[in-house]
Length: 485
Image (cartoon, rainbow, N blue to C red):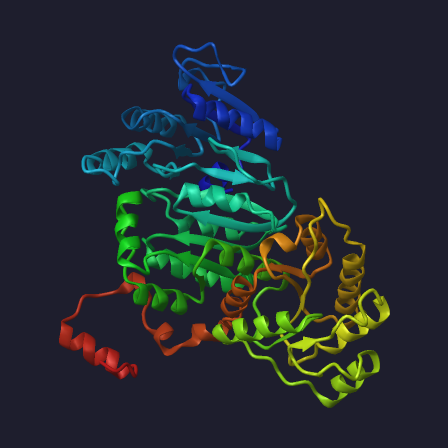
């Protein structure tokens, strides 16, 4: 394993510090089921988090694979140096007060010098949640549970990361990792390690600044080679967001147009909200990239069909018209009052009729449909019964199995698709989706075909070989590629 892999998948963890944050790191490792050694380090306390404490790092039985450093910024620098000298695998630097403050630039340089070749995450970050190996280098509560495989979410913002772990949408999350100030390890370098894990199916990134673009290029190449797509929530669309980013992690967000161009060049999908990020990851986890935005939609309500049609139009989704054979099959099971179209309002006459529902759902898909969506809103399970809705779920599962085509179930709002149902659908290879708007945005983002990576600009030299030219030469070069300058 590389050094960064040792940090992300440790067998021994040192927790340096004695405050509530460090107690929480120990608690969260015990809660998630970490099987390795946990070594608290504190110069005065006999125990931390209920475990016996060592007075210094030098007193540890061995060099730890990973360390969580929960002390002030000045002490952090010295401890990082000690860990580096003793051959530790890496450290999470929790302290703030580095590049994001007026007097922190010098301290940031000192931190990097102390780390040397040892990987560090942060500073100003929470760290690592690894749900496949049951590791929690994390000083707070979180929502991850052990999984065998799933998506990875990497974020510059620790709070955004925590919020995403609390999702109740059934999405299996294998890793959640924060990068903080990215003093040494940027999102792209961390992602290159994570994406190589066979248990990771797709990557989601919360990006404030790109940092090393060449590293993002390498990540994009790995994504294509491994067939593991990447989706990003990139902030900085507004001036206010750009100013907030600078104060948060001392990062420059860059222009929105520039971000769009970079992500498009790299073949990384872009979404606009945390909800859309989760929905896109669901699609990637379940079905991978969609070849286009051709969809079919079914509901037992004309209102739902209308909302789906209007929302889909905003995101460029298309509804191929029904073919003659599809209409013939549908007419065998539906009332003559049903208008046979895509989106389809199949009315409620076949509700509870599993055979008829299966036939109708199966008839709506085909080789020209990239994703068949069934709008299905569950009642509240705490005060209502859902037996009839389970008939619909079984029908969708049968239709997906019979046709071998990608299916999804859409809840009009998040509350109407219970987590237990979402997990069942994932198990059947059917993607559970929430909210018309975020669903359509996610489909639009996830269809981005790999062929976009063959844009003529991608045959230009890599970002690693850039040179500075005069304004006139730059404009002439852009014009040669067809840009209107």
